[in-house]
Image (cartoon, rainbow, N blue to C red):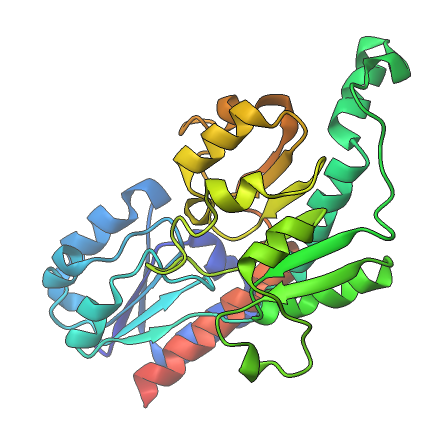
Length: 306
């Protein structure tokens, strides 16, 4: 019958070019009836599955792989891989296809939008109009972005797309990366310097054992008065205990995060009116999502053929 691919994301098949790429290689395409049931349905298929396509909400671990003895290729419509057990996948010889860099511009634009949203007090200003308070409803006035000092954590594709946008607005940008020698054209500084001098910090790092909890109390408390921290990476990069402590001490700081379950995990309540939120949508604009779907479908098909 030929190889079978299981797709956890039904909307991928609505993309004509992604669907065509899969159909050329896989005589049988099985799509999850509901995303919340995707992994259960995948497990039921067991040994009949040769390839799988998931997203960031599907956790692929060793226990799941034990149920898929013939899996050869795994595609994830994502840049990050913290939802994938890479050692388990590598140990079973499963090829992994992701989309590094494909949605970099979308994420960079979202980071910039969040920076502007906090600097210009967009959300409280909107609320002030609706309440009828107008300017009296604003606890603090908006500020100009031009002339601000911005620290960018990371030197990957997203950070690379963000830096020119920031410079176009007249900001002064310093970057932090673990290996500045690999980026000779980048103005770099250590983390302590970045946080001590930056009016805005943008977090653009993958979640790894090294970056989990990287931004803690000492760094956050060193920020200048009125500073803004925007995190379009993963919320776990900012240490929760350190954040709570600095929020209790510093009423002037503002935070924006793009990630899942920010209300459910208490982040929204913790930060309160000083926060700006979005539900992990920075990298899934219409254009970026289509490009990511194409990249994964093509990559999975080619890996299967090869």
